[in-house]
Image 1 (cartoon, rainbow, N blue to C red):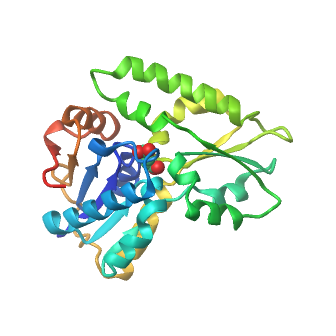
Image 2: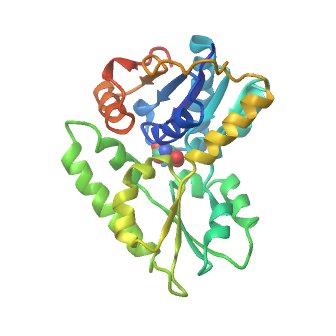
Length: 280
Ligand code: DGL
């Protein structure tokens, strides 16, 4: 049974992996956190494209993946088209900020979008934005530093200063985006356009208030992966759920202890499922 590959610049994609595990309980996954090269959001498109191609190649050659989920908005914006042209046979799924669902949910007609500089500056995002209902106003914010602070907040050695920085940055970006609330003229729907931000969801909800909906993409991406595997005839047999242990192997190009801490904290996985990535 070949696994599904999933990658992100770091731990953000674990939020997508969580949804994939719930949607596809019979599948095996191999997750690669490119922490050694994070954050992607403030790097050039060329750099992110090169990393994405190298990671896809590595996962195909070393892990024989049957599908690849790009669990990173920034990498999807920079590289999904080149990944598709390099690997036309591979089932490939990307993530992008959930603007369309937000247009259906907003009552005030004002939607906030938080994403990385790389995502909001990309042609792909600008095209998506231009295709939205012109009656809806999107307030878009490139949240520099936020993904990195969230990443570092799981590193045991940096946890508390990084957590304080996450709090400060969230406060700053929410203030710049706002006001928030169900009243007319306020933002009532907030799109989390970076997979890392899902891990700051509770803090964000407190800042924007309970009347504001936060939208992330893990579940729709997991459903799309399910549909594509099904139509390609690649779903694993469902006779018995795969045993929890060994269903997921996680690799990092950066700090192994950080990945172990994040995998334990967000997915409840034991540290011995985490390894250093070699040769990518
Ligand atoms: N998690 C990534 C995303 O969804 C990017 C974070 C970063 O490395 O800047 O955009």
